[in-house]
Amino acid sequence: MSASERLRVMFGAAPLKPERITPEAQQVHRLKRMSKADFAALKQHARDHQLVNHKWRNRRWAVLILVNLLFTFSFWLDIQMLEGSLTASRFVGFHLIDLNSALQVMLAHRHVIVNLFIGTATVFVLWVALGGRSFCSWVCPYHLVAEWFEWLHLRLVAKRLVSDHEFHRGARSIFWLTFALLAVLSGYTVFETISPTGILSRALIYGPSLALGWVLLLLLFEVLYSRRAWCRYVCPIGLTYGMVGAISPLRVEYRLEHCFHEGDCRKVCMVPHVLDVVIKGRAADLKTPIGPDCTRCGLCVDVCPSGALVFDIKGLDRLL
Amino acid sequence: MSGKTGEERPAATPQPPAEAGLPAAAGGRPKAPVRRQSSRRRFLRSAFLVGGVLGLAMLGYVPVAGARRTRLRPPGALEENDFLSSCIKCGQCVQVCPVAAIRLDDIDSGFGIGVPLIDARAQACDFSCDAVQCILACPTGSLTYRKPASLATRPGMPLARAPLLKAKEKDAEPTLNLAERMGIARLARPDSCLAVLGKGFRGQARGADFRGRLRYVERDRWRPVAVRDHPYERDLCNLCVTECPIGDAITMQVRVAADGSRQHRPQVLEQCVGCGVCEMICPVDPAAIVIAARQPWAI
Image (cartoon, rainbow over all chains, first blue to last red):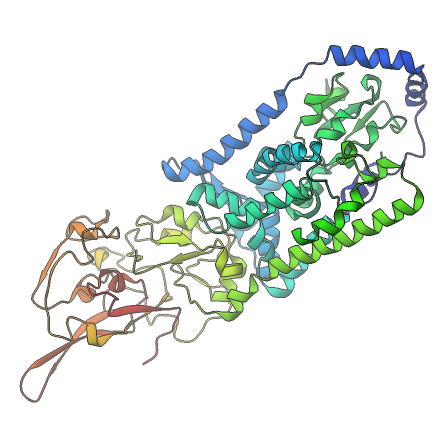
């Protein structure tokens, strides 16, 4: 998948089959065309040796909870480490401002003061280094709550009590554009009114509010109607960080040779279109970086029995 | 949107539930007409999603357009529209306030969600920080000492001169760096004002369970104490005048009537910044003197 193709997919297009496959990758694809019995045996072998681990999930939950607790305790216990909330804060005095909130304010207010600029630039550099959409799965409190409610949704789907309804992923790009336009035209930060990220972050720090009712409605919608709908199809924060993710060196990498194409990774993934490359015969190269829409949550890394998906830093192998 | 659940459900039945998590492109099995139908349904669903979410977001305009409630904003706030558009809703102003006068608004105020406000009756801004730290903490310039020239200022909002802080009267720099008022105090209920009625006041101004705090300069220059721990004893109630943190903001007007009796009445002066201490400390309920939030000085 080329970089432009990965961007196209992030903005909502369906992934295309690659036009050109490298000879090395073709070779691997050819080797994998074994008899059904052999393939089943190999697969069984991999299954038997599968290590069910939650290494990355546990690390991620720990980081996410710690970051949010640091916000909360900075205020409650007055330790003043991380003041403010997720939309804007100061870490030991240094300004940090969420990129999407900054964008909304800049578009609505059309006046940028130095602190706003510094905070935005810091966060931009931070997430370019740490991996773009990592904000979603490693920091955003709504992501964690939605992840827990997703479990409920999947149980109900398995019992055939509800069914999952997909939306067009392009909706998120439309939301991003519309919210940006609304900020310019109305002069209000319209998206912040309904952003569950901001609402939850403020509720954790400053106490519960009526706004939590809106978050609960969103979760109900996700449990009963559409899996992870907010993060997948709506949230412009995700797309903003996705654009940053396009230039981040940290990402998940797919290694064709290790893959048995069982598709477990795509079942756990919140943004499975980025994993289209794992479909049998799709990979154009032996190693493929996963696209910028990936939140680097590590669920696929945890679930892959054969180590075909790993965290990777672009250019690191050349340096070492 | 959940109302559409019933009619949409058949759309998903051709697909086994196990594939529900996979993107539509990966299915590939359903026959062409079914596929066309399901993609049309997906398009309609998406259109409803976009319309629904945007519609709900725009509902936030209703409380703003109606402007039924005028909020008292923290010191140095921009004009209301500029304030709402520039506030990033982080609450750093809340965190630095030594008397916890600032709290954040809820979703019922629409676009004003997460925006700071002061409920003066519950806890007024008494400037116990001296430097107005909420202004220093604000990362977007929603609270500012000096408005950029491009932003609107209503006449009557700027003060004639920098307000003198009674607590700093003996300092080299006794004024606040703030040149705009938050609102203006008004004797809204003169009929219930103890001074107007010629009455005194004894005891805790707001009762034994009032949680508000105030900086009493004679006790501690920096640390505010609970109002309930500071009982009063006045032959004529003048709490709004004596507890006002700003010099020349309010006086007790005395008028001698024809029969020689003296009539008292608190009078708000031009230097009033609208901090709300008079409203918080007023012992009658509801308060006789209140802050008209974001109202300019008018004679």
